[in-house]
Image (tube, rainbow, N blue to C red):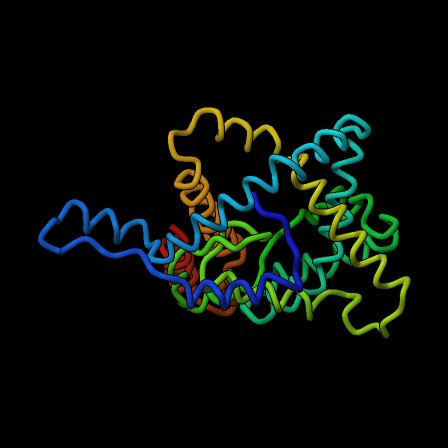
Amino acid sequence: MGIVVKSVAPLLAVGALLAGCATAPPQSNHAAYEAYEQQNDPLKPFNKVSYHFDNKLDTYVLKPIALGYIDVTTPGIRAHVADFMSNTDAPAQLLEFMAAGKPRDAGTTLVRFLVNSTVGIGGLFDPAGALGYHRVYTDLGLTLAGYGVPEGPYLYLPFAGPSDLRDATGIPASIVLTPTFPAPPSTGLTIFNYGSDALSVVNTRAQLHGTISNIRKTSLDPYATFRSLYRQHRAALLKEINKRDVATPPAWYSAAQRKAMRHEEYDASN
């Protein structure tokens, strides 16, 4: 799995576009060509190099650090760290939900940020969840997907992990939309940004340790497994957003019109 180095990843994404592409099999070989199309991985030569680089980095650096972190923390502490990191992403997600035309999720995100930033001590705790405002998630890639932008070819970025051309656009956006981005630069702010990024990486790696270890032990092709799981996860996130944030038929519509709208919304989300 990759780690997030936000200032480097966008440049690597550009490098990926310039990398050599995998050669498609002849269309006369229907089975091979169909498999190639289904993988949607024409940048596989670059992606495989990136994957193996990250795998080595994880084996010799990130995994040992994560295991040490697991030894000195509890699941509760790791959950609080994840809550804090999620809260720092809320302003960006608020704007992305608004851009996607998802007012319910935008409202939930705003309430969660205000409550958790105050009562929840900066997001270390999740009192908003106890009040019924449960965590929702989006990013720029999912917003673009909601407007019908295709995912594009699969892309594995060094230091950032599985992605695709559409989702990779969210990396520079995530930098600009962080709460600390507009603040005047200072030594303290720099230390906080690098420290929080490092903590987020280690905490996330610790939470995914069991899953990653299991895939590496049992999968015949971990690269293909991670690619498949990434796509399934992104599709599930988009489906959740579409099912959760549907329009409410106006009260002045007739019963038949409201029923028809609900059926249309249900069909669109399935």
